Amino acid sequence: MAAAGMSTAGPKKSLLLVPYEDFINDLLPLYTDPHVRIRIGSAGREYKLSKALLCKQFAYFAATFTGGFWEGEEQSTTLTEIDGVVSTRSFEMLVQWLYLGRVVFGELEPTEAITAIIEFARIADMCRVTGMESLMAERIKAIIISNPVPKTGSPPGPSELKDTSWLRSKHITSVADLPDGHPVRHILAAAAVHGYLRHDYHKFSKAMREVHSFSVDLLDAVKATLKTLRCESFSGNGITFKDPLRGETL
Image (cartoon, rainbow, N blue to C red; front, side, top):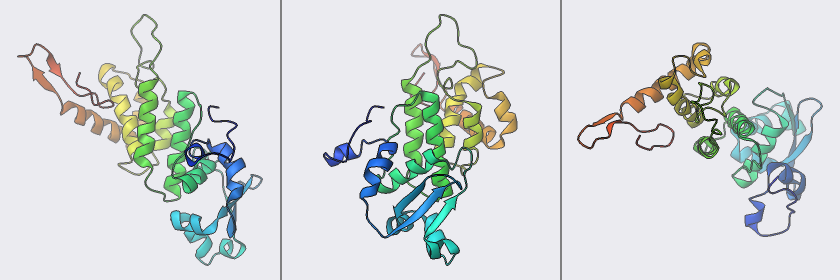
């Protein structure tokens, strides 16, 4: 990984570039008591975290540890693993966000990077963490734009279009549980507009029928795109519109 091997020494700028795994193993122990203990799954790793910081930043854990429950007395809790939401990876990303206000994903291939970002967005939503939604959407957008589909010499099929080649149906299903208007939901819908307009049976045709929120998001994105249509007959450019993902006039 790009930042693997970075130690606790060095300037603050280097600290902010440490991937979440190294942050958990090398930097987290430096933070002092009082702390609470959080375990992921019944047999998972246990983390010791600053109670004051955790409860101040995350309403979910404030209720857990200060709400008069058993967890508050024991100063410990166990989070049940939930596929695509609560995992060792997503929780460690959440912890890095708690302490640094950012997440360093390290080097992942595009599809897995998008999966990780969505997992982080979902655990953040579960814990009622705000302030990262647009940042995560922009990160997904950057991944899509900076990783074009390799050219094959033939017209791309529905699953090979540049804006959706790294997206999977599991991404569509997972973001459906985020709140209406969430920027991550919006960016996936914007990426799907090109395929929807170009192919009768596009990559996510099945997802549209099965995931109601995605249908709504995609139709909203298509409507917004159609509103940008302009007839440029005098300039010789014909009909133009704005790319819903990049904002460029096409």
